[in-house]
Image (cartoon, helix red, strand yellow):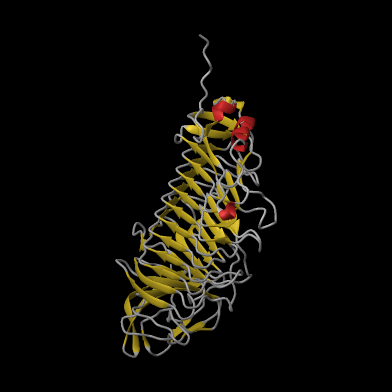
Length: 490
């Protein structure tokens, strides 16, 4: 009686096994050809648009399989037994797994119902390598990446170049040299709509944890932990006189996006970054919703920004919670890319513990503000030079503006380069708090005088070069009264 070698896959219709095609999985042998042969053995889908039968699943048993670049197309799945089923790239070049054809034509690039599941995907990059992505999806539809660990790639862990109704869920993405997940409208022929990222941890990637840009619509990000991303600063545009230093390291970037929903996510930056290192960069976007998220700011800030790319307008920031670990750190930072690029009609509603900083005195026009706090809610303005100053206290402006509740205080830092007169602030209300910090220039001797409605005992004594003095006020009726004593120049 003779014995026949048993194949890993002998039953018609069940997943094919890469070991049946010669894959070894010993962490040394190059298994690229075996993987591609297994994939190519699956029935061809002639027309996925009309749900014609084809495709199938390639099973990856536990082991470490070395591959260079492999390609999946419509209805093909690559499924392992968890993170112990490791696919490790042989060299840091190109995308390790490409889904769909990477060409300009919308029709030819169309691929659907691809699945990559229960795998450990490892790159071998030791520095940034452009194009060295873990998974690159080219205009893919109704596809899934789930329960994968993705690390070590020279560019993005996952890059969606167009597509719709595709999902990333239950993954652990860390230590890649660019973005963790990148949703991009790659061209006019490659729109990106209605993609989903959920239940995923994205951490310690050198670029943004997640970036959505290029006109993407309907992306949903929920129940994710996005933390400690961004070791390398990125330039997102600058205008002389507005954003002279404009490289930000962020966990989440939304650029030129519409109807992006970010819900129930946790953001944190644990490293000792400077204050410009932020959780969220929102620019040139409309009708985006950031809700029920927790921002553990530590030493960094949340940035809500209008830039040279355009004004962030009609966005909703609602029911979010900010860390109270460091109450002196600003966590909502508004700046503009030009005098005509202020955001309009943004809603800040029912957020806890906002500490607002406004680089140029206004967060924008027609803002609805209704927030609670267990610490002082404030904003800060920096004024450089001038012979007079009229503090602009109003957070809202323009026709139809609505404000239910005010921030509890303004801090105005004034860099003195000549004698100055402080005029009555705009839009004063009872209980308003106002703090002035005056900094003498290299010449010194600059004097400060006050409008008669400021009830104060200010002294210019000690106003020599480089010295600083602080004075605080509150508003009641037609007057603004000094609180406590002026801090002498020091």
